[in-house]
Length: 113
Length: 116
Image (cartoon, rainbow over all chains, first blue to last red; front, side):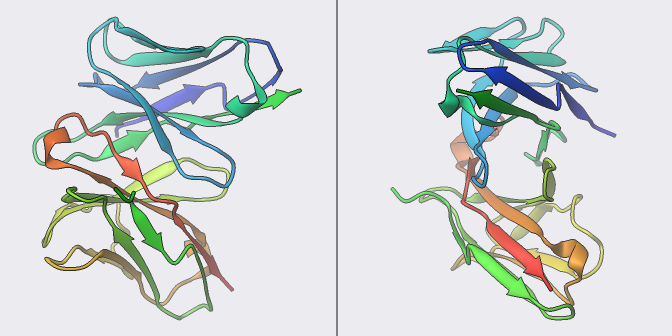
């Protein structure tokens, strides 16, 4: 079946350190999206990548979509305590009439001040 | 422009009771999705609906679970005869027709269901 795996499952960093989470899909994706979920909160859309090899930046966050459109990464430079949460990648599966997203397993980021 | 509204935020049910979860999509959005999140786990797709139609219910358990999105009113996720294993956070998301193919979804705050 369709699977989206993320590593690591959990990452604990000191404030100011960098952080990267990796996302791998079992199949080629038309696009990939990243969401952030704060503890006790709901997923919030961060960004969408569509093109092969695409790189997008949002302040300290850098998102990359692999050349084969099967993997992606999120890199945070100089983490802050506000970065705490679980980061999910998600890809659309099914095509055609269905728009369901398959979410990755998530990476929980803990930032120690 | 109000976001995706879910209610109730918290719902407590005893085993065997029914749970009804409501979701009003963002204004202008006609696509609704339901996801379930077990504690410490990721989001699992359940069902995708458009007005009066179920488009994809491949993630819905075959028994006790049903969903609807009527012409008027919110989308409803209904769980009959709840069991302890149904305890989870249920998130609703919506997207506008213009995003079809882009699939950007906007999530509500969720309903936390606890089954005693």
